[in-house]
Image (cartoon, rainbow, N blue to C red):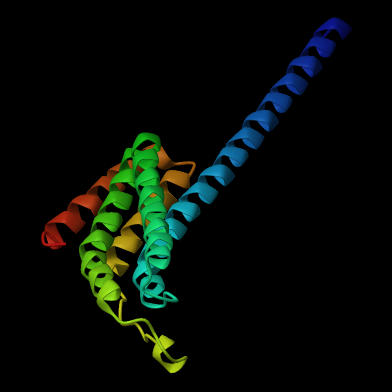
Length: 178
């Protein structure tokens, strides 16, 4: 093997290693961004779930307070709907699972929010102990989204989508009323 061939082989190997390193770095950075985005989408759901508690713990029932708390409720609603849309564009399966979770939250929160607005303003610290009064049962939907998001973050995501579709179909079959 001549010196030129060795030099060319070393150069080609170096370029391939550099390219592989670059692609791996990019894939890792993308996964980190997506992980953060999925976590932020779940955080938005939790903020939405907290709204009945925030409404019940409002400082007063004057117009300014109603406006401020109503604004928070609107902002939270806009945020979860943003994540619903973004996820459906970015990953239709994760978006579908998030939509299922959000729909479940809407169904239960609607009544809790109405009830929270009807509650009188709290007078004492002990009244602030709402002890799960507005909790919702969405653990099944929560886990479905975690499953879908986790599979989308996998390097084998394209191969795992069949299983994710099956999990979503199974959920819809087992929980038609949710």
